[in-house]
Image (cartoon, rainbow, N blue to C red; front, top):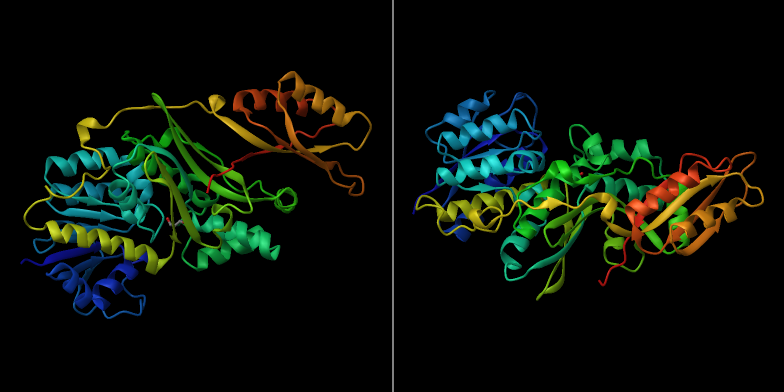
Length: 436
Ligand code: HSE
């Protein structure tokens, strides 16, 4: 029996949560592992703030490299977030022979391949469960629980901040800015909340999920990404009238030698499980050829849930320490030489059903002109709805289409918005139907 000694980089929201669990659950963790996990050191630039935990038994400092180099640290937990300096500290930790656990999805999505190679070369483990879905053990489920399956699709509500904003906008008619501030105060949002609302955080997480699901190298830069900042109360109400709720989804599917990866606000039917995932909750639906549909639900952000996932990774590595990581699954769930460099499907080739909201002059012939262009492109409508006139403004016209290729839809919309009577501020959302 040998204890595992942990050093923390970052005592912000998640770092504080990890310290809290390691101290408060010390005896539970030890009973589960048959050995102790001890928090020996932590670094943060601000050591004056009261975090509401007793860190008197922990060596504190403001230099991350002191933790990375410490002789008495076996595992470094990176909770700084962002690309740099987090990447440099993780590289240095691996070079100093430390296992690494991180909650940093940006880091894994962008630099994961480099870090996995470095860790493998040195016989070290790298854990990142908390990077996707906060407290939900969805990576473990995908990597291990669903390992016998060819994965057919992934649908995820992967950003707590966006889900919180969309829920409050719908349920309380709340203003976007006020809800975003509330999400920041609750510790859900990224340091730069544009990462949340522009869909980048979801894209980080989707890229990791897709790589793991399909045995592919991570290609974050190729994920098609749209955020929630163009959604208006008009769209939320129109979608509701048609039987849908708007959620920011990450979607990944395999196609022969390509992977479809996209992040965008999506209309989901009210009676689907994903439509009923609200507030900061996240959910991931993973479908496999044998298991069929599986669904993982829980808190996607915040101190305690995210720290729960970080500590679970620490515990997995503690089981392997100090004998070696031979029995741990590979970080991306496939042996490295079996992982493939799969191309990302161009968005123009992706087939979807669409919600299109146009702002049009309320005059004869406009709808006929619009539908005639759609007919030219062989786009068939499932529903069309025109709302009453608002003073002198254009009126919203909302359409739902049957499935068509994105390139075809975009070409039709370009022609439609070029019409004199149609504003150039069309909103295009995609719609999904689910078997579960
Ligand atoms: N900013 C992220 C979110 C935190 O809102 O979900 C969890 O990754």
